[in-house]
Image 1: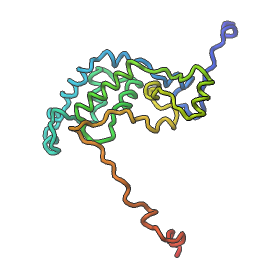
Image 2: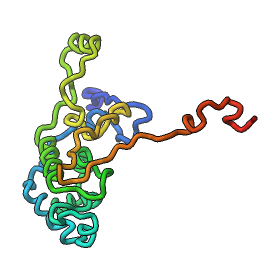
Image 3: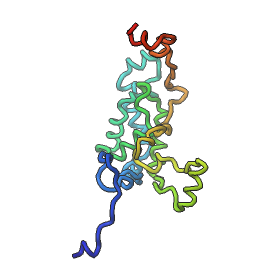
Image 4: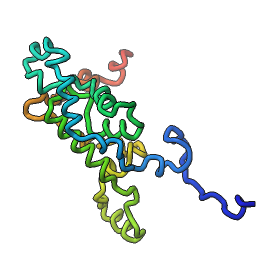
Length: 210
């Protein structure tokens, strides 16, 4: 009888998005204030960086690549650093935020200035999450859509992770970048492809039929 008098609010969900969890996917992926990360001062992260620096863990490697071991650590050990500083296994959203602002796929080492920049971005997102609701007026939304105007709120500040596949493009553009003492990613254009390699050949000869 209580259920009939007070029925539960309907939850919106999409087919094919079950990996985001049951119920309202917008509510499950919205950005929340992360007090667990804010409780740890930024200096604690920097101290942990120096404790895991190349000088202490891999001094031989620092000499081989010609860098100051005090100012670099292995990039792949960043999740371990986070767990060490927190004193526990990070929660799912905490780890998502961490990976949003730190690039762990670039060079093998990270410099301390890039690390400090990433920590500042992570703390700003943890303290000031944006609302996932962009508009209060459908008329204003239609006007912006008609003129291809994007909303000013960055998705990284409003969601814990990309909600749709289209949001994955550009999601990691707010990551901290290597400083002048670090190693920057080298972008090299494709020198040749199977098309240019066989340019000028006919369709039959391309597939070896003639």
